[in-house]
Length: 500
Image (cartoon, rainbow, N blue to C red; front, side):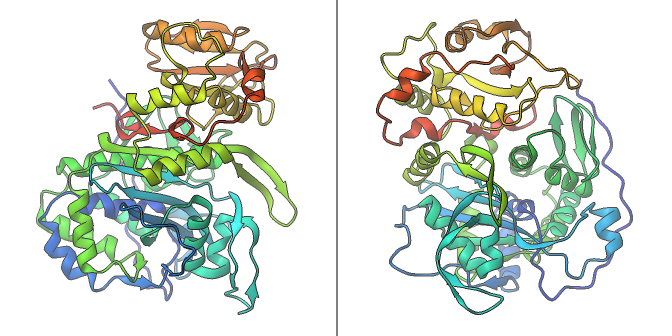
């Protein structure tokens, strides 16, 4: 049986004075609004009444250089980290939000609803992504600033919401139709209004910085506990990448819960949730009442099973830049393939996408043992050697070899004991798939782990060697961006939701 415990207890609600600029927040409040609006047509009348009170910002600009309209509806959802008007005791004791705030986007997600209304795609953008920042007028000085490189999360502070949108459009090639800026206090209140949300983890999660202390198994979290879950950055060596994956898992679980309707059958509760969420977010001026109602209609048939989640593929996670410090670099080919697939409306997961991945990513001259193509073999990389950056290098090399890596390696458990030999941990039920992985890593030791599931674990040791045939692949002409790289690391909502 999964571990169960009652929701986290937190102090009595604190009444906060309404800040003049309610901009700091979290991705999750915006995603909550998406899920809540999707639950029933009964919320439409409520939404129509509340929509007129939404705080709106002029975020979507014009101009001939914008990406073409692809027929889908694409949102940029950001959470900022401003704390104006929040009592210090609330920040420290209730929200565990320590440190100094920054006038920047702390979290960034691209949420796209397909043109046929049948699918949603969520792309997490690492906040330290080192990208092109368009020319703009600086908010602080009023001076015109030329285009330059910088962290994508700084665009908001440099030129506000319009520059954040332009930076995303310019670097992804995706046309942003709407903008949502959220407040994480609304996240706490809304999760409580839903009666909590269950999360699951195969191992305990502890982060003294955020206050997260989660046992292995399934736990129902209240608002404050859920906030700690999505904010934690010091659970393991994966830092922001691990946090983004937990955010995706939480969103999938939230979508699954909301679309069952069990938490929102009470019209009064639905009204209260909508009021809490919509009065705590900022949206672009083009998202009027009619658009909100259409949005709700497009979402009401969605579920975790037809939502894809992915993080922009990365090539380097600690790229030092003078004046910017540690930044992350995108895997250019992988990122281009991902955004091309999103723009074209192709699914990022499933057998069809996996088959395309295998045929595009693996050179025909490279022999593959077994009958399962690499694109259908899911791999989680663990750094077992304690060598900085090894996990990300192994993940990137396996992805280039065609395997469907998670894109988010982490440190292997073991109390700091370094591993020399690379180990492939696999469930014996997938004995044919492991042949394909073992053929690419012939020096690895095979370790059967009954019950591990369909995702293999590669524990990289200090003697790790790149996948067999890597030199041949590197020497061959690089293929044009295709779905192959785009699906690497993508997961469906069903895959990352808690077992029902």
